[in-house]
Figure (cartoon, rainbow, N blue to C red):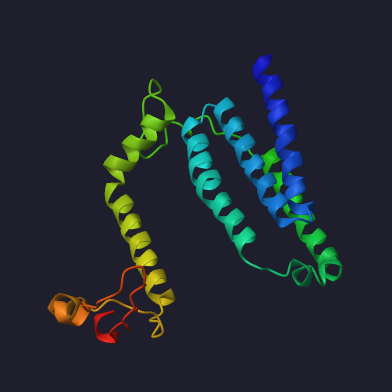
Length: 211
């Protein structure tokens, strides 16, 4: 009784927050409703027994992607009014695409069944006594270890490529010249002045080579 009630509550909140993501005029509010939708989807995964997917959804999407969207929306000066121009003109096309996707999902849900021998036809069967997190970890780090490492290398190369493409050498920025700083002598940086009691000493002009 309680799991069914929690499933209904989380599903209702998920559908409401998903609708608010699309209909919110404020982009910051839309991202916040997106985070709420991810959290409720993670709760549904927990009720279904898929704790690994729930934690991945919270850590990756809520902790990284959604927060990144929030900071990007808040920091960038995006003209959302200009982006929404022409929305009503393309609304019928969007409604048609949404209707087609809804019909396809309905046909898939109503016409799909699980074959009786599906569990026995697995390529790498796992015992039913372990959790899905243990089964997934065993498959990734034993049978698919090479592919898992290759995916990490591909992501690393993509990250390095993005940094190289966006890096700009700014000529106007001041930089330290360590060789000049280490080779300087006290005569180049210190100036002895005699000041009267109660009078301030004149400030010497800095040397450009020692900056």
